[in-house]
Amino acid sequence: MYDVLIAGAGPTGLTLASELIRRDIDVRLIDAADAPFEGARGKGIQPRSLEIFDMMGIVHELLSFGSLYPFLKIHLGPFAFKRGSLGTRHEPSESRPHPNLMMVPQWRTQQVVQRHVESLGGRVEYGVALESLVQDKDHVTVTLTNGETVKVRFLVGCDGARSATREALQLPLIGEALDNKTSIVADLEVEDLDRAFWHAWPLHRGGVRSLAPLPHTKLFQLQAPERMADGGLEEGIKHTTGKRLIRIAWQSRFKHQRRMVERYRVGRAFLAGDAAHIHPPAGAQGLNTGLQDAWNLGWKLAAAIRTGNDSILETYQAERLPIAANMLSLTSTLHTQHSTRRGELTNQLSVGYRDGPLARGAPVGDLHPGDRMPNERLADGRNLLSTMRHGGATLLKRSARPNVLIRPDGYVAEFTDKPVPDYFGLEVIEVEAAR
Image 1 (tube, rainbow, N blue to C red):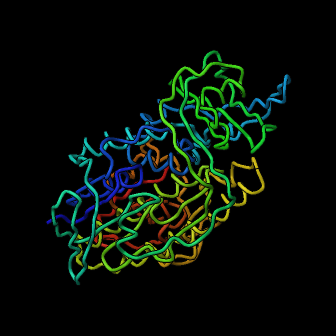
Image 2: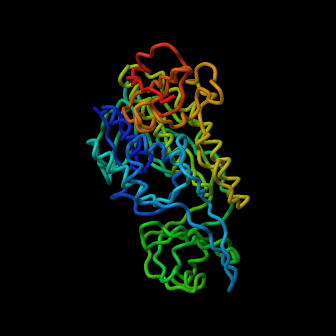
Protein backbone atom coordinates (compact mmCIF):
# COMPACT_ATOMS: atom_id res chain seq x y z
CA MET A 1 0.00 0.00 0.00
CA TYR A 2 1.27 3.44 -0.93
CA ASP A 3 1.04 6.49 1.32
CA VAL A 4 0.03 8.77 -1.56
CA LEU A 5 -1.15 8.20 -5.12
CA ILE A 6 -0.66 11.25 -7.35
CA ALA A 7 -2.72 11.28 -10.54
CA GLY A 8 -1.06 13.58 -13.09
CA ALA A 9 2.67 14.09 -13.71
CA GLY A 10 2.73 17.65 -14.97
CA PRO A 11 4.67 20.34 -13.06
CA THR A 12 2.15 20.27 -10.18
CA GLY A 13 2.17 16.50 -9.71
CA LEU A 14 5.94 16.27 -10.11
CA THR A 15 6.53 19.04 -7.57
CA LEU A 16 4.24 17.31 -5.08
CA ALA A 17 5.99 13.99 -5.67
CA SER A 18 9.42 15.50 -5.05
CA GLU A 19 8.23 17.12 -1.81
CA LEU A 20 6.85 13.84 -0.53
CA ILE A 21 9.66 11.55 -1.65
CA ARG A 22 12.37 13.73 -0.11
CA ARG A 23 10.50 13.40 3.18
CA ASP A 24 10.53 9.59 2.87
CA ILE A 25 6.85 9.26 1.96
CA ASP A 26 5.96 6.28 -0.25
CA VAL A 27 4.51 7.74 -3.48
CA ARG A 28 3.06 6.35 -6.68
CA LEU A 29 2.90 8.81 -9.59
CA ILE A 30 0.77 8.05 -12.67
CA ASP A 31 -0.12 9.96 -15.82
CA ALA A 32 -2.74 9.27 -18.47
CA ALA A 33 -0.47 10.38 -21.33
CA ASP A 34 1.85 7.92 -23.02
CA ALA A 35 4.86 10.25 -22.71
CA PRO A 36 5.88 13.57 -21.12
CA PHE A 37 4.14 16.74 -22.31
CA GLU A 38 5.87 18.28 -25.34
CA GLY A 39 4.49 21.84 -25.54
CA ALA A 40 5.68 25.21 -24.25
CA ARG A 41 2.18 26.18 -23.08
CA GLY A 42 2.84 27.50 -19.52
CA LYS A 43 6.09 29.29 -20.27
CA GLY A 44 6.16 32.03 -17.59
CA ILE A 45 7.87 31.17 -14.27
CA GLN A 46 7.17 33.77 -11.60
CA PRO A 47 9.74 34.95 -9.00
CA ARG A 48 8.04 33.09 -6.13
CA SER A 49 8.10 29.85 -8.11
CA LEU A 50 11.82 30.42 -8.79
CA GLU A 51 12.36 30.71 -5.04
CA ILE A 52 10.53 27.41 -4.60
CA PHE A 53 12.79 25.80 -7.19
CA ASP A 54 15.74 27.30 -5.28
CA MET A 55 14.52 25.62 -2.07
CA MET A 56 14.23 22.39 -4.08
CA GLY A 57 17.82 22.81 -5.26
CA ILE A 58 17.04 22.90 -9.00
CA VAL A 59 16.70 26.59 -9.83
CA HIS A 60 20.07 26.92 -11.58
CA GLU A 61 19.36 24.03 -13.91
CA LEU A 62 15.95 25.49 -14.70
CA LEU A 63 17.36 28.96 -15.39
CA SER A 64 19.92 27.49 -17.78
CA PHE A 65 16.98 26.74 -20.11
CA GLY A 66 15.29 30.14 -19.69
CA SER A 67 15.58 33.83 -20.44
CA LEU A 68 14.08 37.14 -19.44
CA TYR A 69 10.91 38.02 -21.32
CA PRO A 70 11.87 39.71 -24.61
CA PHE A 71 10.75 43.17 -25.64
CA LEU A 72 7.66 43.42 -27.82
CA LYS A 73 7.65 44.40 -31.48
CA ILE A 74 4.24 45.61 -32.65
CA HIS A 75 3.52 45.19 -36.36
CA LEU A 76 1.03 47.59 -37.97
CA GLY A 77 0.91 46.83 -41.66
CA PRO A 78 4.28 47.81 -43.18
CA PHE A 79 5.33 49.56 -39.96
CA ALA A 80 6.71 48.12 -36.71
CA PHE A 81 7.72 49.67 -33.42
CA LYS A 82 9.28 48.40 -30.22
CA ARG A 83 7.57 48.38 -26.85
CA GLY A 84 8.52 47.29 -23.36
CA SER A 85 8.59 43.73 -22.11
CA LEU A 86 5.83 41.93 -20.22
CA GLY A 87 8.52 41.00 -17.71
CA THR A 88 10.67 43.13 -15.42
CA ARG A 89 14.43 43.61 -15.48
CA HIS A 90 15.25 44.17 -11.82
CA GLU A 91 18.70 43.48 -10.44
CA PRO A 92 18.79 40.62 -7.91
CA SER A 93 19.02 41.67 -4.27
CA GLU A 94 19.69 39.78 -1.07
CA SER A 95 16.00 39.65 -0.14
CA ARG A 96 14.86 38.97 -3.73
CA PRO A 97 17.46 36.80 -5.46
CA HIS A 98 15.05 35.92 -8.30
CA PRO A 99 13.19 39.19 -8.98
CA ASN A 100 12.07 38.69 -12.58
CA LEU A 101 9.54 36.68 -14.55
CA MET A 102 11.47 34.12 -16.60
CA MET A 103 10.46 32.40 -19.82
CA VAL A 104 10.98 28.63 -19.72
CA PRO A 105 8.97 26.33 -22.01
CA GLN A 106 6.67 24.13 -19.94
CA TRP A 107 8.19 20.91 -21.27
CA ARG A 108 11.58 22.09 -20.02
CA THR A 109 10.21 22.89 -16.56
CA GLN A 110 8.58 19.48 -16.45
CA GLN A 111 11.80 17.81 -17.60
CA VAL A 112 13.86 19.49 -14.86
CA VAL A 113 11.42 18.60 -12.09
CA GLN A 114 11.02 15.04 -13.39
CA ARG A 115 14.79 14.53 -13.34
CA HIS A 116 14.74 15.78 -9.74
CA VAL A 117 12.01 13.27 -8.84
CA GLU A 118 13.99 10.47 -10.46
CA SER A 119 17.16 11.51 -8.61
CA LEU A 120 15.20 11.02 -5.38
CA GLY A 121 14.16 7.52 -6.45
CA GLY A 122 10.72 8.27 -7.87
CA ARG A 123 9.35 7.52 -11.32
CA VAL A 124 6.36 8.32 -13.51
CA GLU A 125 4.09 5.54 -14.78
CA TYR A 126 2.83 6.77 -18.15
CA GLY A 127 -0.30 5.46 -19.85
CA VAL A 128 -2.07 4.87 -16.52
CA ALA A 129 -4.94 6.99 -15.20
CA LEU A 130 -7.53 6.97 -12.45
CA GLU A 131 -10.82 5.35 -13.44
CA SER A 132 -12.82 5.34 -10.20
CA LEU A 133 -12.39 5.58 -6.45
CA VAL A 134 -14.07 4.53 -3.21
CA GLN A 135 -13.19 6.01 0.18
CA ASP A 136 -13.45 4.71 3.72
CA LYS A 137 -12.22 6.14 7.01
CA ASP A 138 -8.59 5.07 6.56
CA HIS A 139 -7.97 4.53 2.85
CA VAL A 140 -8.86 5.34 -0.72
CA THR A 141 -9.37 2.36 -3.02
CA VAL A 142 -8.57 3.40 -6.59
CA THR A 143 -9.28 1.52 -9.79
CA LEU A 144 -6.83 2.36 -12.56
CA THR A 145 -7.32 2.22 -16.32
CA ASN A 146 -4.88 -0.70 -16.57
CA GLY A 147 -7.35 -2.79 -14.52
CA GLU A 148 -5.36 -2.59 -11.31
CA THR A 149 -6.99 -1.80 -7.97
CA VAL A 150 -4.80 -0.13 -5.31
CA LYS A 151 -5.30 1.07 -1.75
CA VAL A 152 -3.62 4.29 -0.66
CA ARG A 153 -3.76 6.48 2.41
CA PHE A 154 -4.27 9.65 0.39
CA LEU A 155 -5.03 10.54 -3.24
CA VAL A 156 -4.13 13.82 -4.95
CA GLY A 157 -5.58 14.73 -8.35
CA CYS A 158 -3.09 16.84 -10.32
CA ASP A 159 -4.58 15.61 -13.57
CA GLY A 160 -5.41 18.89 -15.25
CA ALA A 161 -8.45 20.67 -16.57
CA ARG A 162 -10.18 17.43 -17.59
CA SER A 163 -9.39 15.83 -14.24
CA ALA A 164 -10.70 12.30 -13.79
CA THR A 165 -10.10 12.69 -10.05
CA ARG A 166 -12.31 15.78 -9.87
CA GLU A 167 -15.02 13.97 -11.84
CA ALA A 168 -14.83 10.92 -9.55
CA LEU A 169 -15.17 13.23 -6.52
CA GLN A 170 -18.19 14.89 -8.18
CA LEU A 171 -16.74 18.37 -7.76
CA PRO A 172 -18.00 20.72 -10.48
CA LEU A 173 -15.82 23.43 -11.99
CA ILE A 174 -17.73 26.64 -11.34
CA GLY A 175 -17.18 29.70 -13.52
CA GLU A 176 -17.50 30.82 -17.09
CA ALA A 177 -15.89 31.28 -20.47
CA LEU A 178 -14.49 34.81 -20.80
CA ASP A 179 -15.49 35.04 -24.45
CA ASN A 180 -16.88 32.83 -27.20
CA LYS A 181 -13.61 32.56 -29.10
CA THR A 182 -11.42 29.54 -29.62
CA SER A 183 -7.70 30.24 -29.63
CA ILE A 184 -4.77 28.29 -30.96
CA VAL A 185 -1.43 27.85 -29.21
CA ALA A 186 1.40 26.20 -31.11
CA ASP A 187 5.17 25.83 -31.08
CA LEU A 188 6.51 26.65 -34.54
CA GLU A 189 9.74 27.14 -36.41
CA VAL A 190 9.47 30.20 -38.71
CA GLU A 191 12.10 31.03 -41.29
CA ASP A 192 14.13 34.24 -40.71
CA LEU A 193 11.83 35.76 -38.04
CA ASP A 194 13.86 37.96 -35.67
CA ARG A 195 14.29 36.06 -32.39
CA ALA A 196 15.23 39.18 -30.42
CA PHE A 197 11.54 40.17 -30.03
CA TRP A 198 8.13 38.92 -29.08
CA HIS A 199 6.17 39.84 -32.22
CA ALA A 200 2.52 40.93 -32.16
CA TRP A 201 0.06 41.76 -34.94
CA PRO A 202 -2.94 43.47 -33.29
CA LEU A 203 -4.92 44.57 -36.38
CA HIS A 204 -5.91 41.23 -37.84
CA ARG A 205 -9.58 40.27 -37.73
CA GLY A 206 -10.49 38.15 -34.73
CA GLY A 207 -7.82 39.44 -32.37
CA VAL A 208 -4.09 39.71 -31.70
CA ARG A 209 -1.68 37.22 -33.21
CA SER A 210 1.68 36.86 -31.49
CA LEU A 211 4.88 34.85 -31.79
CA ALA A 212 7.20 34.62 -28.76
CA PRO A 213 10.72 33.22 -29.22
CA LEU A 214 11.22 30.21 -26.93
CA PRO A 215 14.69 30.35 -25.34
CA HIS A 216 17.36 27.82 -26.30
CA THR A 217 15.23 26.43 -29.13
CA LYS A 218 14.52 27.36 -32.75
CA LEU A 219 10.82 27.67 -31.96
CA PHE A 220 8.29 30.44 -31.42
CA GLN A 221 5.10 30.05 -29.42
CA LEU A 222 2.11 31.18 -31.46
CA GLN A 223 -0.97 32.53 -29.68
CA ALA A 224 -3.77 33.53 -32.03
CA PRO A 225 -7.47 33.23 -32.81
CA GLU A 226 -8.28 29.83 -34.28
CA ARG A 227 -9.46 31.47 -37.51
CA MET A 228 -5.80 32.17 -38.33
CA ALA A 229 -5.53 28.47 -39.18
CA ASP A 230 -8.66 28.30 -41.35
CA GLY A 231 -6.53 27.84 -44.45
CA GLY A 232 -3.85 25.92 -42.58
CA LEU A 233 -1.15 27.26 -40.27
CA GLU A 234 1.37 27.52 -43.10
CA GLU A 235 -0.89 29.97 -44.94
CA GLY A 236 -1.77 31.79 -41.71
CA ILE A 237 1.88 32.31 -40.78
CA LYS A 238 2.75 33.48 -44.30
CA HIS A 239 -0.15 35.94 -44.36
CA THR A 240 0.67 37.31 -40.89
CA THR A 241 4.47 37.47 -40.95
CA GLY A 242 5.46 37.23 -44.60
CA LYS A 243 7.71 34.35 -43.54
CA ARG A 244 7.69 30.63 -44.28
CA LEU A 245 6.55 28.10 -41.70
CA ILE A 246 9.23 25.41 -41.45
CA ARG A 247 7.58 23.02 -38.99
CA ILE A 248 4.99 22.61 -36.27
CA ALA A 249 6.36 20.98 -33.11
CA TRP A 250 3.12 21.02 -31.09
CA GLN A 251 -0.30 22.66 -31.20
CA SER A 252 -3.56 22.82 -29.27
CA ARG A 253 -6.86 24.72 -29.15
CA PHE A 254 -8.43 26.26 -26.06
CA LYS A 255 -11.03 28.71 -24.79
CA HIS A 256 -10.30 31.47 -22.29
CA GLN A 257 -12.01 30.41 -19.09
CA ARG A 258 -12.09 31.16 -15.39
CA ARG A 259 -13.31 28.21 -13.39
CA MET A 260 -12.55 26.60 -10.04
CA VAL A 261 -13.90 24.12 -7.55
CA GLU A 262 -15.52 25.09 -4.25
CA ARG A 263 -13.63 22.42 -2.31
CA TYR A 264 -10.02 21.24 -2.50
CA ARG A 265 -10.62 18.18 -0.34
CA VAL A 266 -13.15 15.37 -0.12
CA GLY A 267 -12.20 12.99 2.68
CA ARG A 268 -8.76 11.58 1.92
CA ALA A 269 -8.67 12.95 -1.64
CA PHE A 270 -7.34 16.35 -2.72
CA LEU A 271 -7.10 18.45 -5.88
CA ALA A 272 -4.23 20.70 -6.98
CA GLY A 273 -3.33 22.78 -10.03
CA ASP A 274 -5.56 22.87 -13.11
CA ALA A 275 -7.70 20.10 -11.65
CA ALA A 276 -8.87 22.72 -9.12
CA HIS A 277 -8.66 26.00 -11.06
CA ILE A 278 -8.44 26.97 -14.74
CA HIS A 279 -6.94 30.35 -15.68
CA PRO A 280 -6.69 32.33 -18.89
CA PRO A 281 -3.02 32.62 -19.91
CA ALA A 282 -2.78 36.38 -19.21
CA GLY A 283 -0.40 37.06 -16.33
CA ALA A 284 1.24 33.60 -16.30
CA GLN A 285 -0.51 32.46 -13.13
CA GLY A 286 -1.97 29.03 -13.88
CA LEU A 287 1.16 26.87 -13.79
CA ASN A 288 2.64 28.91 -10.95
CA THR A 289 -0.47 28.68 -8.80
CA GLY A 290 -0.51 24.92 -9.35
CA LEU A 291 3.15 24.59 -8.35
CA GLN A 292 2.41 26.47 -5.17
CA ASP A 293 -0.61 24.29 -4.40
CA ALA A 294 1.78 21.33 -4.46
CA TRP A 295 4.39 23.19 -2.42
CA ASN A 296 1.79 23.92 0.26
CA LEU A 297 0.30 20.42 0.34
CA GLY A 298 3.50 18.37 0.22
CA TRP A 299 4.89 19.06 3.67
CA LYS A 300 1.41 18.88 5.21
CA LEU A 301 0.76 15.41 3.81
CA ALA A 302 4.18 14.30 5.08
CA ALA A 303 3.42 15.70 8.55
CA ALA A 304 0.01 14.01 8.65
CA ILE A 305 1.43 10.64 7.60
CA ARG A 306 4.34 10.80 10.05
CA THR A 307 2.24 11.83 13.05
CA GLY A 308 -0.96 9.96 12.23
CA ASN A 309 -2.84 13.22 12.84
CA ASP A 310 -4.37 14.68 9.70
CA SER A 311 -5.73 17.91 11.24
CA ILE A 312 -2.97 19.87 9.48
CA LEU A 313 -4.57 18.90 6.16
CA GLU A 314 -7.57 21.11 6.90
CA THR A 315 -5.28 24.11 6.39
CA TYR A 316 -4.58 23.25 2.73
CA GLN A 317 -7.96 24.39 1.44
CA ALA A 318 -8.12 27.24 3.95
CA GLU A 319 -4.84 28.67 2.63
CA ARG A 320 -4.87 27.81 -1.05
CA LEU A 321 -8.47 28.24 -2.18
CA PRO A 322 -8.63 32.01 -1.45
CA ILE A 323 -5.34 32.53 -3.29
CA ALA A 324 -6.52 30.62 -6.34
CA ALA A 325 -9.73 32.69 -6.33
CA ASN A 326 -7.72 35.93 -6.17
CA MET A 327 -5.36 34.82 -8.93
CA LEU A 328 -8.35 33.81 -11.05
CA SER A 329 -9.88 37.26 -10.62
CA LEU A 330 -6.54 38.87 -11.52
CA THR A 331 -5.95 36.84 -14.68
CA SER A 332 -9.55 37.36 -15.81
CA THR A 333 -9.15 41.13 -15.41
CA LEU A 334 -5.83 41.13 -17.29
CA HIS A 335 -7.47 39.16 -20.10
CA THR A 336 -10.63 41.25 -20.47
CA GLN A 337 -8.75 44.57 -20.23
CA HIS A 338 -5.92 43.39 -22.53
CA SER A 339 -3.62 44.68 -19.80
CA THR A 340 0.17 44.43 -19.93
CA ARG A 341 0.56 45.23 -16.21
CA ARG A 342 2.86 42.73 -14.55
CA GLY A 343 5.66 42.91 -11.96
CA GLU A 344 4.43 43.25 -8.37
CA LEU A 345 0.92 42.49 -9.55
CA THR A 346 1.76 39.01 -10.77
CA ASN A 347 5.11 37.90 -9.30
CA GLN A 348 3.42 36.19 -6.29
CA LEU A 349 6.09 37.44 -3.86
CA SER A 350 3.43 39.28 -1.87
CA VAL A 351 1.09 36.27 -1.80
CA GLY A 352 0.93 34.73 1.64
CA TYR A 353 -1.19 33.38 4.45
CA ARG A 354 -1.56 36.24 6.95
CA ASP A 355 -5.22 35.38 7.49
CA GLY A 356 -4.63 31.64 7.43
CA PRO A 357 -5.04 29.20 10.31
CA LEU A 358 -1.28 28.68 10.76
CA ALA A 359 -0.35 32.35 11.24
CA ARG A 360 0.45 32.76 14.95
CA GLY A 361 1.12 35.88 16.95
CA ALA A 362 1.92 39.50 16.20
CA PRO A 363 4.07 40.93 13.39
CA VAL A 364 7.57 42.29 13.83
CA GLY A 365 7.99 45.44 11.79
CA ASP A 366 6.55 44.90 8.31
CA LEU A 367 6.87 41.12 8.48
CA HIS A 368 3.76 39.23 9.56
CA PRO A 369 3.13 35.57 10.39
CA GLY A 370 1.97 34.02 7.12
CA ASP A 371 4.19 36.23 4.94
CA ARG A 372 6.80 34.90 2.54
CA MET A 373 10.10 34.92 4.41
CA PRO A 374 12.55 37.17 2.51
CA ASN A 375 15.93 35.69 1.75
CA GLU A 376 18.87 36.96 3.79
CA ARG A 377 22.54 36.27 4.41
CA LEU A 378 23.39 34.00 7.33
CA ALA A 379 26.28 34.23 9.77
CA ASP A 380 28.14 31.42 7.98
CA GLY A 381 27.84 33.19 4.61
CA ARG A 382 25.13 30.98 3.16
CA ASN A 383 21.83 32.42 1.99
CA LEU A 384 18.65 31.46 3.83
CA LEU A 385 16.88 29.96 0.81
CA SER A 386 19.60 27.38 0.25
CA THR A 387 19.39 26.17 3.87
CA MET A 388 15.67 25.37 3.63
CA ARG A 389 16.13 22.21 1.56
CA HIS A 390 16.05 19.82 4.51
CA GLY A 391 12.30 19.14 4.55
CA GLY A 392 11.50 20.49 7.99
CA ALA A 393 10.93 23.91 9.52
CA THR A 394 13.71 26.44 10.10
CA LEU A 395 14.37 28.58 13.17
CA LEU A 396 16.26 31.72 12.21
CA LYS A 397 18.05 32.86 15.37
CA ARG A 398 18.63 36.62 15.63
CA SER A 399 20.54 38.41 18.39
CA ALA A 400 18.72 41.74 18.53
CA ARG A 401 15.27 40.71 17.31
CA PRO A 402 12.86 37.84 17.97
CA ASN A 403 13.74 34.57 16.28
CA VAL A 404 11.70 33.60 13.24
CA LEU A 405 10.12 30.17 12.92
CA ILE A 406 9.84 29.50 9.19
CA ARG A 407 7.45 26.88 7.86
CA PRO A 408 8.78 24.10 5.61
CA ASP A 409 7.37 26.00 2.61
CA GLY A 410 9.24 29.21 3.42
CA TYR A 411 6.49 31.29 5.06
CA VAL A 412 6.71 32.84 8.53
CA ALA A 413 4.99 30.67 11.16
CA GLU A 414 5.64 32.94 14.14
CA PHE A 415 8.18 35.07 15.98
CA THR A 416 9.43 33.44 19.15
CA ASP A 417 12.18 33.44 21.77
CA LYS A 418 11.32 29.93 22.95
CA PRO A 419 12.85 26.64 21.81
CA VAL A 420 10.90 24.87 19.05
CA PRO A 421 11.46 21.09 19.21
CA ASP A 422 9.36 20.26 16.13
CA TYR A 423 6.76 21.71 13.79
CA PHE A 424 3.79 19.41 13.22
CA GLY A 425 6.10 16.47 13.73
CA LEU A 426 8.74 17.72 11.30
CA GLU A 427 12.29 18.52 12.37
CA VAL A 428 13.28 22.13 13.11
CA ILE A 429 16.76 23.17 11.93
CA GLU A 430 18.38 26.21 13.59
CA VAL A 431 20.41 28.73 11.58
CA GLU A 432 22.11 31.96 12.69
CA ALA A 433 21.29 35.31 11.10
CA ALA A 434 24.23 37.49 10.03
CA ARG A 435 22.79 40.45 11.93
